[in-house]
Length: 229
Image 1 (cartoon, rainbow, N blue to C red):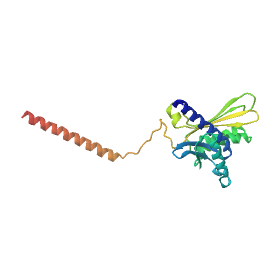
Image 2: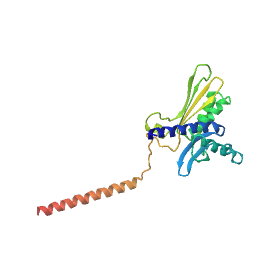
Image 3: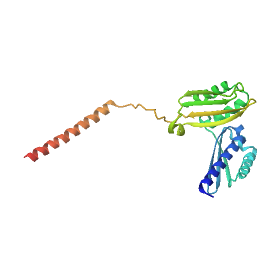
Image 4: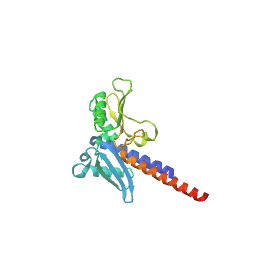
């Protein structure tokens, strides 16, 4: 098998596993999954809002997930569950929770602004929520909720913006939910910091510099006089 084809198959397998896990743990608040191959097997880490629902009583459900992962061709899967420490800054988790709220019957504007305010009040620098589909009629459209600063182009849009997507299944059709978040610990390219400066210290440093220049000029003058003599 060619190396390129093997890479494509591995990526496709990870995508299928991610989509299956998202459907299986959607009630626990899916916040992402990391799949890492190790010498002892494959480490699968789930990030959820409520880990107890994934583990199950006596670990029954997590063992069932482990057995199911073997059917995808994953060698010796080791499943671990981590709780999301700051749910408001996990875009995938916010998209999943918003989609579940829409499925429970929340009006899309109420749900969009509710989650937007929740994310911004937690301290995010920017947030953008898009809900698209048949919102109020048979004609599909997109509603956007924006607050703070959001970057759409360049490398910062890929490295600094957290992105999440999920779907909500309604009677009129399927709604797409997209969430973009800039966490508070990110330093944006146009941000700068004004530092406090000690004026007396600056004056002392400038005086020392002038003294050093004077000594250098004096030494050069003495060397010139000695050469002329």
